[in-house]
Length: 267
Length: 315
Image (cartoon, rainbow over all chains, first blue to last red; front, side, top):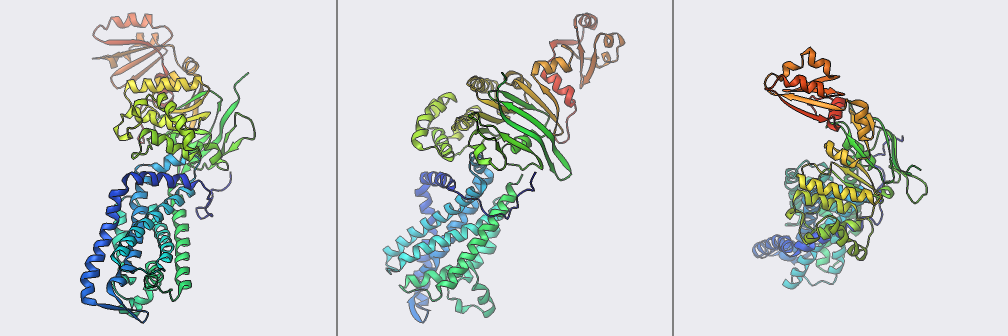
């Protein structure tokens, strides 16, 4: 008998993730309208309350040497935050329900679909939901006239990548979870601080130098740095650097998530 | 001519830490055969099923599937997906999708096998009919009884028209009506030539369905054969149970002991195993206040003889 395969082996992927993705899509279609309201109501409240309320106090914000209205500054950051939250929520609570509570994954793996493809399907599904949420919020932002920049079209695929990145990270915690309580820690101890350190609500220039150096490497910071200029119809100053941080974070997170999920299922 | 070999496990071994759960287990299933695996809790039944499915990697041993159409045998874990594409599985706990109706559960599961919706739409009415769920096509699993959910799981395991079904305790927790309906359906499948690997705690289920039985204990095979032959081989044909006030004293009664080949005590009941129960029953008639039950030896007696009557700590 050969030695048991390492959990760190490369992913074994094929088209077989697709029916699993379709399954999630089909369940979601039944609940899409209520879930749509839930998905966009909260980010919109943040935007309206902070954007118009705080915006009146703050007035203009400096971005790359340009003065922009606070609501535009906030909208371009908070859309990344919404994508992050939507992907994280789906890849934690919902994926955990399917994996652990409903045992949907076990059923799927009795069919000719391996764990690697199930994990990929969950990752892409959570990213899809993030993109969906971001798209609806973007639609509202367009309607409110916050930005009509043509370069917003480029922000769209970037937001998909933001979803992929955060769903990969969330799947690490999904693989480690014993119950739903564990995810509260992730949201309050990881995502919430990141939200405040990534320049969503205020420019990172306000941060002390040391904190700012840490902030440079946060996944959400790099996402915001890519998306924000597009809202102002400008190209990001360092697209390569931020893109590379996102790609490497995603690849590393996906690899770790897959390895830990394999460990969890190695009975 | 014996039926061709369909599935085999050879010398399977699995340890968890210091505990050996499966210890050198081998068995084979022929096309169209029903093989039952019985054993106390913790005997290694579920681990064996999981190894057959490639869900648990054995420390040693092989699992092979021999396609009935011919061709090279498929082997776990190398050909895990190809093997699973040809199997039907009903696991111990239902994994139905609570958000889908019965019909959607089948359609979505068919997709996992690469079956197109059009092909599935033709199969679904037949599968629901088979599962006696034709009128529940639009119901969700949460609205079904335990027996209906198990039958939906069985129908789901049949979407790919498998030649072999793996059933892990398919009737645990069902009421007698639901169990009988399940057995009837499994017998239909056997008649159609589908082979079954079944684990169960119910001896009547094993006796009714299985052509051959494997008795497991502590991860080892301790007996194998046809149910009736196993009983004949290991047990006296007749059993007299005596219970009631003072029954336990009978176990020490030399006259009675001489009339039985074997005497066992469990709780308040004395079991006399004998070739011929008549003299024993006559002798017992003198103890009129006792209640007796005279019956043929059955699989449960065999199971208890082989694996003991005491409750296992891990059970």
